[in-house]
View 1 (tube, rainbow, N blue to C red):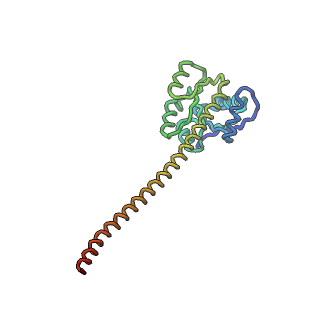
View 2 (tube, rainbow, N blue to C red):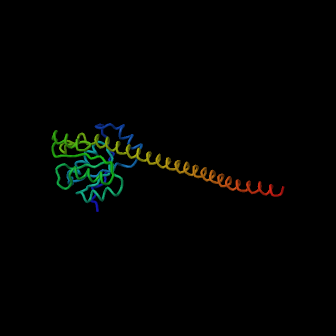
View 3 (spheres, rainbow, N blue to C red):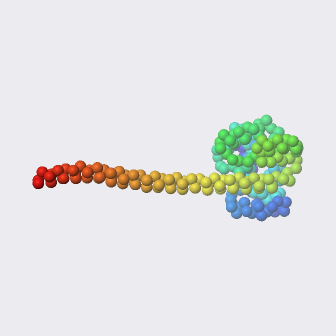
Length: 212
C-alpha cells in the first residue's frame, strides 16, 4: 500500500509564477499533475503543498516513504514528477534513477535538500536530476514543477505519436507483404500453367503426326 498525503487541488491566485504556462498545461491536460514525494516526511510534504498552493499550482501529491512503496506507486497511475528528499537514507538518487531505468520510466526527479549546496546541486544534476531545490527556500518550486510536468507530458505525447506511427508502419508493411505474396502466388500460378501447357503441346503435336 502507498500512504497518501491529502490530495490538494489548488486554485488560489498568485502572480509569482508564469500563469500562461499553467493555463497551457491545464488546456492540454485537464487532470492535475501527479507528484510522488519520496523520502520526505509529512511536515516537509505539507510545506511543499503550501508552497504550490500559494502559487496556484493544482497537483495531486502522494507521499512515498521508501523504495518499496515507490516501485508499487510507479506501477499504478501515471506519474508526472518525483520530488525526492536528498537527506534521507530511505531512498537515494542513484536508487531512484536505477529503478526508473529498470521500469523504462522517463520521469524527472527534483531533489530537495535542507539547505542549498552548490557543489551538491551540481553533482545531483550531473547525475541525472532535473533540478536541486532548497527546502528552506521554495520560491523556485512552482516554476520547476510546472516546467518539468510540461516536459514530462510533452514526452508522453511524443511517445504516443511515435507508437501510432509505428502501428501505421506495421499495417503498411503488412499490406505490402500481403501484396507481394499475392504477386508471388500469381507468378507461381502462371508458371504452373506454363509448365502444364508445354507437355500438352508436345503431346498434341505428336498425336497430329500420328494421325497424318
